[in-house]
Image 1 (cartoon, rainbow over the protein chains, first blue to last red):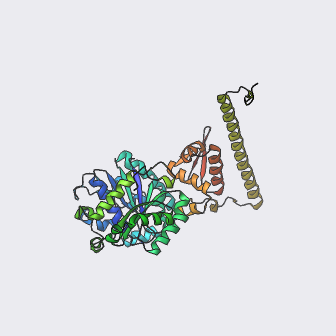
Image 2: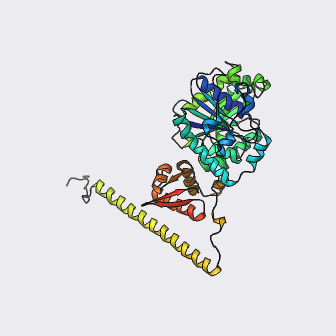
Image 3: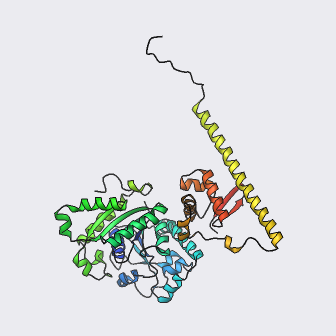
Length: 280
Length: 137
């Protein structure tokens, strides 16, 4: 299972995609796994802000440079494990937040996009064989655009993060039917910011909710993360997995990480995505 | 013969292995025929192009023929062709046999699909000895 690639995607912004991707990466690294976390949201880069405390000095190479063939992936990755006191290695690849870089990406041709997707496909062998990386996580841009499509099609499994908002749910339904199913991707849905914890757990509605959502989306739900007020109030740029160890949000995420480990990476049948007895 | 006793028909004594070998042989011949048909088709297209080029006195093969199989374009392709391009993204360059191994489809299916993509301008192919390699140009 070494070198597997997980993309974190959503149909719209604000679902908590980056919070999930960054904290999932730190959760894995805390367990001793070697992780690469790549910011593939070239239009709205955010990892540079989330990891600002862990980046020493100016960034020499961006992921934009790697995608354009101006540097190697080794040069584009920054090791932040020591700064966050992690047991495994956490390497982050940052998208350039400069306006010129964003404009540059937006003006790229189709030929460039083909090269970009080929680079993402070949990344897997470099990361696992040459850099001993166990998991690579792509934090993508929301919706259907080149950077997110390229990330999704080149990953082994996709996590779609959604809230219970009907706009999100409809968006995910459309995206699954028109895009994910066309590419036959292994996909799981993670429900985030779901109404207050007490209302789900007290009346045992969680299972009912999962079964309703699986029926509506026709894809497995890998987890339901309640809406925690302090998580919402915390800065989006903060790293909960470092700053608030033991927080219930992180326990939820650990469960997601555990379930991801039991995904049948080989089986292409999405209905049999999980190993025996690991989903409930 | 007692009532109710079933009569076992004696089937011709053909070994299953022999049958399978014959089947594989037949399939290989079908593959060869398909390949030669694809090759012939390609030659016919080339002759047609040369003829058109001669009568119009200009290059018939325009730049527009070279198309980029980017992710958005893949969505508009039929599922069978999309699968071949996806496999080529991963393998970079591959024979029809390599593609078949990656997609779990028949070699003949991959050969037809890849050649179709070459004709459409999405892929290129090159011959190295007896092997034909497909790649994204």
